[in-house]
Length: 83
Image 1: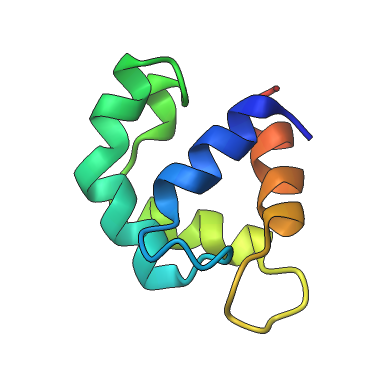
Image 2 (image 1 turned 90 degrees about the horizontal axis):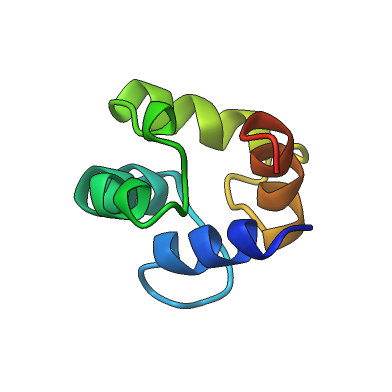
């Protein structure tokens, strides 16, 4: 698991409860995505629209419980973003 995945997870965890919901991922990427890309936290091509954010959430939610742990999240973003 990469440090970039941890940085991104923490930036998306708006309520800082240690998990991500679909709404958090969509809202945070909408609000913070361009800034995170400018800082090199995610690639510019990784900043998409709400449907892209929702698809990222779905890909990571391996157990279908509608919340993401850091482990679920990092497994997908490390692979998707090539970290």
